[in-house]
Length: 231
Image (cartoon, rainbow, N blue to C red; front, side):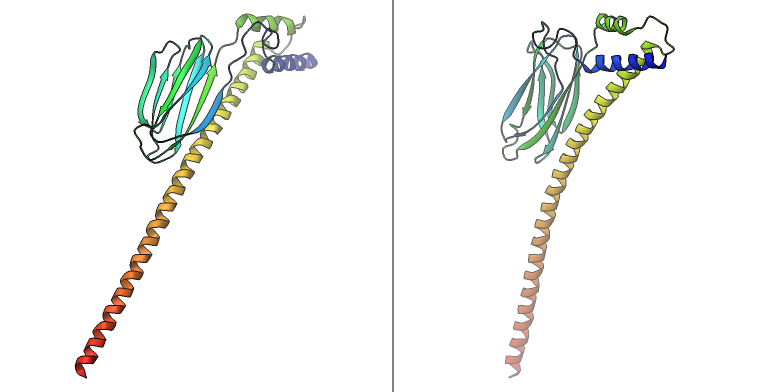
C-alpha cells in the first residue's frame, strides 16, 4: 500500500510539472502563456506601450512600480484587445489591477511620462496569468494512475495538496519579485536623499568658512584702525 501511494504521488507530481498533451512540438494547441516581468527606463516627455497576448477565460493581474526618478509617479492605462479602456490612472507610484475573465488577444499597457519635462522614470511591471485546468484532462489522468485496489490515501486529497503547494510557491516567487522592486525603489530614494544631504552639507560648510573669514577680516581691520588712531 505504501509503495502504491508513493507511485501515485510521483505520477501526480509529473502530471503537474509536464505540459498538457497536445501542446508542444507538432501539437495542435497554442503554447501556454507565461508570466513575465520587465524593468525599463521611461524618458522625460515620452510614452511607451507594451502588448501582451492573453488566452480567453483566464485571469490577468498587472502590477507596476515606479522605482526611480523624481516624484516616483507615472500615468498608466490598460486596454483590452477590442480597444476598450479598462484602467486609467494619473501620476501614480504603483498599482495592481486584475482582469477576469480575459479576452483572447493582445492587451495594451501604456506608461506615460509626458507631464515631466526633465526627470526620467525607472518603471518595473509584472504580468501574472492564472487559468483553471481542464477537468476532463484531470479525470483522464486520474483514471490512468488509479490502481485497481483501494488505497488508504485519497487521490483527491493528494491532488489538492500538491496544487495548493504549487500555488503558494508561485505566489512566493511573485512576492519576492515585488520585494526586489520595492527594495530597488527605496535604494534609489535613499541614494538621492544622500546626494542632497551631502550637497547641502557642503554648502553649509562653505558658508560657515566664508562667515569665519569675513569676521576675522573685520576684527583685524577694526584693530588696525584703532592702532592707527592711537598713534
